[in-house]
Image 1 (cartoon, rainbow, N blue to C red):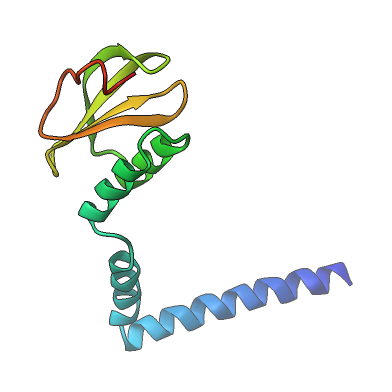
Image 2 (image 1 turned 90 degrees about the vertical axis):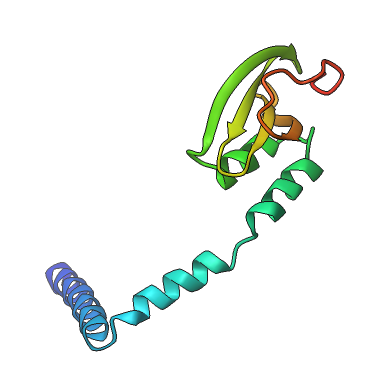
Length: 124
């Protein structure tokens, strides 16, 4: 009985794989259209920056920053602030600097341009 269930499962996976491949063979733009639609459905870069700015100082803001700009942030400075030190991260593509406190996973400051040192009052 177990062998029959295993073979049935393998056969179903094979059918789905073959069906998907044949669909793409007849209409290759199906996969591309779905990917393009998924990519367009998210917020714009300006909306992402505005959302991070709005949530500044709230726990979890760092997670939001990493999700929106994964791989696009360059550390340009460390300064005293937050719960010890904050890291200033620059996004070259959008010319924006974020000051991030890893102790509390919060973004404490956001400014247009490349800012190596934020005023102390902004990163407290």
